[in-house]
Length: 219
Image (spheres, rainbow, N blue to C red):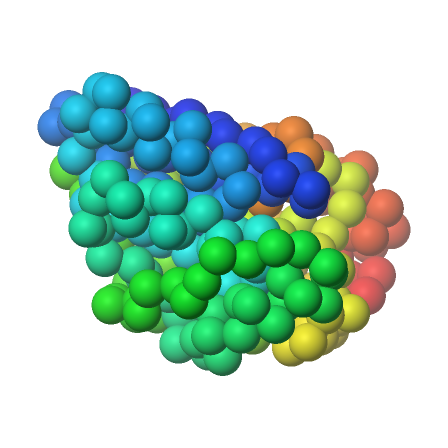
């Protein structure tokens, strides 16, 4: 397995973000830098890590607020689906809505993500799948070789992403889970935006939003 993953968690929403590393080359990417990002920035600096990209599953505040800290130690380009750019540009408004401080503005994203895109760093390949519903431009990132999917806030252990925020849509979210998550092999590890990791099988069989009918048919 060429992919090594470190999890970082913090902030008022206890958001999970990730450092994904190619063990063969030492190259890495940062996924969803949240309020914990200063810790990762220190690791990047102290370990001399080579960061190829900052990749965002979506642009809610808790998944983007740490970008300035990461940009202090790397000029790696920011990758974001274009449908989430309006959310990204309103990160300050999101913070005010939750009564939280915000250090902005955020750097402009340089790269876009699209469905079926192959995202490479070192010898690792991540396959991009569009998965709207929690946010209009939400994507998940799948590494078939490692049996890992970074699913952001689409699905959690025994739960699903909220759809009551601007741009949310419950039916779209359920369709995304059925078509883009539950179609992955059962043993695939789901690295989520909040809470512990889980697997496709655990959620297909035990998630109360999905279990009543196979593959999320309940919704």
